[in-house]
Image (cartoon, rainbow, N blue to C red):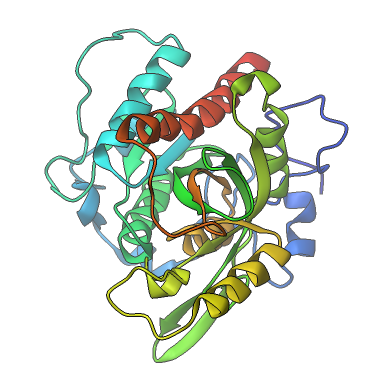
Length: 334
């Protein structure tokens, strides 16, 4: 079997040799698990029950396989970018339209999921920009339907990103973190999901080469640092992230600092609320993925987000800049 990597950067000597979903190395990384990718790069979902459906309704996207010609609508997608809010992902779509110099710049974007009233999804050329709400349940609902959408649309070798905000650990506020793995609240690199009354621990790792490629495109001229490291995906904003300023707190500041320093010593560089599940589900689907978040504060120095709204708005654009540069580089190389 030969390498089938669809390389984004072709001249990186310090990069991992293959992507994690390369068929050549899949068996080594995922022993005993069939490769969820066809020879042409399209997704092969390992759920035989889908074959028995006359129509698959992607309820939260407001789409289905009977009413819509999904390959015609989405078959040219290469990048799927997800983030928390509808406004942010509309801004990202507008930004990518400028970066890729696509036609109809300035025209109002159409929310392709408006009938569902749950999320927002915008398509600009080969880029899908989708909101996912806050936290793992909201994010995984739309993520799983988007994975199925890519399957039905016969998209080849898609790359997924989550762009967002976070609290940093030991790095300056305003820095960008490119996540390499997710850590849950029990300090395990897994996403724990109960299935049929039993907890399954899904490994929470992101594609090593994609993360390296994204970080390698950072520049001293950016005006902010771009770091690679782990990301804690918390199930709660306050106690789940060892904050002292929530409505409930039954631990000391010393307890908090011990926990945060333990995370830091594990190589964790930031905390948000989706990393473990996003990592685990894209990995299980054989999809290359990365998480790129800006930090709003250094949690080792406090719990509250204190920068001005103007500053936070500027910082929120930094992950867009980093991911937009990577996407532009892909089409430059091709």
